[in-house]
Image (cartoon, rainbow, N blue to C red; front, side, top):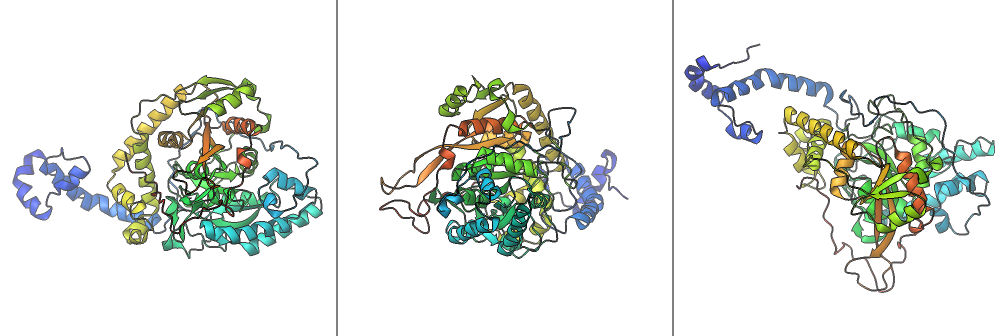
Length: 572
């Protein structure tokens, strides 16, 4: 193939002729920060791109990019978050869960709706309630509160009663599958369930039914859990705006939930589901969990398989549980963790049983923004607490995040952009703007960002001299660094404060306060054990949001007057 080379010797004599065929696109080179080439070299590049690069680009696109969502043909360039050179395979043993002996069935459905997974499981095991009854209670709440919170996309009622019936039949025969047997739950609507729409929260895909079955759904189904709904995913997993509206925060319905795992956070907070599975690329578990005041786990990258889940970035996407408590997060993680044969990044991680961790042997750091009450509580439980600072020299973790996430996302939604479906997107200043910008990030600069990421990971590893640390779960820098490194964090509710500009002193609406418990990759059990220790002597996670009674002389305007702009990732 003719490369169209214009060397120093023939450049001058052919320059004018070449310019007629290939006018120099100087602004394009400047946009790529490659304006240092002289005109001869620019012409050579332009001709080479036309003759060589573009045919290859089009051929590859035809092979793998005609479908959106990144559900097939994953990149073989795999990120491994482990800090251990030798990966240890996990055994088949499950965790040893506490038993709630002498448990009684509450008299009203409201109290049942806010019981923990382990409590509900004990009711089922002792035949104080059936899975069909539980399913009915939560389906009623879905239908009552889902429209108010704009948090539910599809109710899977027929499937739910079928799975509940199967769970009850097994229990009646003495066959016990584990603590999730018969427990209703919801999935973020980027997770594929056969025969039901998987909308990705987007009007462009709201009628989409995929012929796949997500690995995480298979795991929960095999554990006997009962799927009752597909919950709101912000459009294409960006924020809390979706084709049906914008998801509300149950603790203050004038606010929105933030983050694309909007439905899982809002529904768990409101007692619409006992637990839900959401996802995070950068912030979509931590932000909505903090806003809605629920306990949630963003696990180690690779801990949970992602086959059958819409992909933003293969090296950043994670699935994790939203629950009533850290103990419930342990239960769900135990069911969904492990190697997914079709997810190249998933791993068998040798997690210690969080219920057996001796926290008195741990040294835990606390950052300047750590809540002192959390530090004091853990110290009173025998944990060695020390001041800590996570040190690294990389000056723009967000810049690395943007390059990684946006380029990967564009590769998965190339057809969507090329067919101008981005013009239909629910929020023009979100994915449409970011992915247009990503179109001009070169492969060289993408790789340089990954090298900078590698440097960041090495520096964080060298700085991580404690077993875990406490800090703000929603600090944007820590969100970016944590996701780039692949470290787990548990979001823990630690209290409430008055809402700003309250219309009355009697309002029951509250702003939730949370903290983050961070651990090194593959040490989710440490963060979970610390969270359980804190929750064993506090009750913030047991409070009910004021959906039905926000207080005298208070009302929620519709639309809200206190509009909170959608989170945007592109600001520096």
